[in-house]
Image (spheres, rainbow, N blue to C red):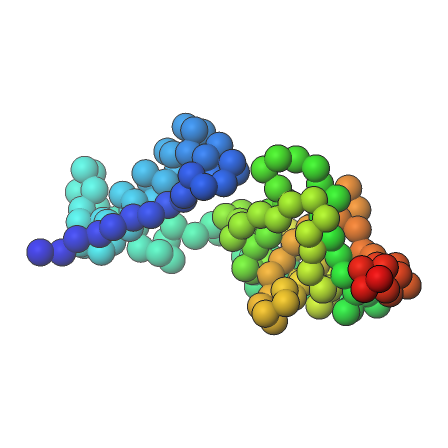
Length: 161
């Protein structure tokens, strides 16, 4: 028998828990499930028409590829760290987007700058963690700061003493 298991979010982060309390978000999840199941099982809607195909549900406005463009930066290789002091942490993403964060990191934590992009009109750094994995974070100076190279050297020397 065909079946589906849906895992939409997890309540192990405050951001996810808050979304799961938002009725508009839950309505959108429910609509997504209904459309997806309708397509998967080739169901007809109550009006007698078939469930809209993926192409017919898209906006008539053409979008640029993933709505992001490369800006470039002279900060490549420098450490960027969170200066956000909120208890829920600063979101990071596994792609160039501002929705569905992959996780959060706390004040003082950070990664190496790989590059800079404009994503849906706002700047993001593509960053690399110690394992070489790439993630995306805000480039807003309200939430992150790039550490000067000489600051990194001083920190390293001080930690070795």
